[in-house]
Image (cartoon, rainbow, N blue to C red; front, top):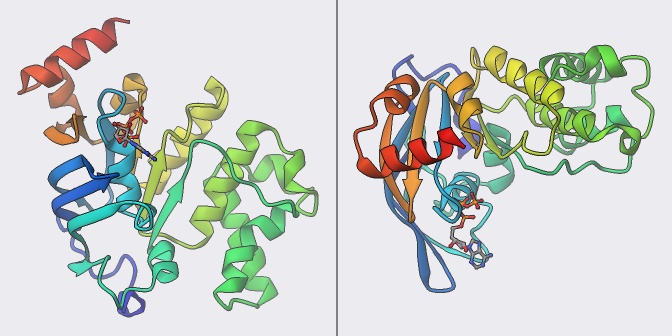
Length: 263
Ligand SMILES: Nc1ncnc2c1ncn2[C@@H]1O[C@H](COP(=O)(O)OP(=O)(O)OP(=O)(O)O)[C@@H](O)[C@H]1O
């Protein structure tokens, strides 16, 4: 069913392309995401912040149906108005629309080129010229092209940790996702690589809606338009990042920020 959605074309600038309605996630009978109602506007970067165990990652994973096997997910996750948990939504197609980058880079033991084209080929793209172009564009968007353009056939396992994460970003981007989810994706990177990824995200905002979980409040302040504060499985507050950091409306947000920004 998602196949019928033309990526990037139908949403107006103010449309919330991803909306959750009373989203609840249960892990071993415990409700760890507790009735989240939130929307994400097209072409924005939203940071999800909050203390450890607040449910940020569980929430993020639900947006990509990563926890459907082991957890119970209730409520609605509407992508362009379609509930992604509906029985006729194909999970592989969904993940071409909503991509994900994890904390640790998961690299296949194959060439840099093949790491990027693997999923594309699985989705039926065989044209070499097109694949070459996508590899180049995606690596440029991930800020890795200059470093690897002369060694695309080298095994990707030989890349540094930072480069491997940038390759994962390129691989996710190759599928042209409309939404990109990042789960602490720069937390294991050095400052230079973090900066490179952040620069990529800023550029990508023109065509992608980005939602990122981060413990790095400075990062949230640097790159996000909006910030959502989670605590104990609940959404406590959402606002423009500058407003939320400067004048938090909730005392819980205030306490968290003052404690963690001072450290
Ligand atoms: N596989 C699991 N088994 C049991 N409990 C889990 C599992 N995964 C998460 N939880 C629990 O769910 C709650 C929310 O965890 P989650 O990882 O989503 O929070 P978080 O805000 O992302 O935390 P962190 O910032 O530390 O990653 C926590 O109480 C956690 O212990």
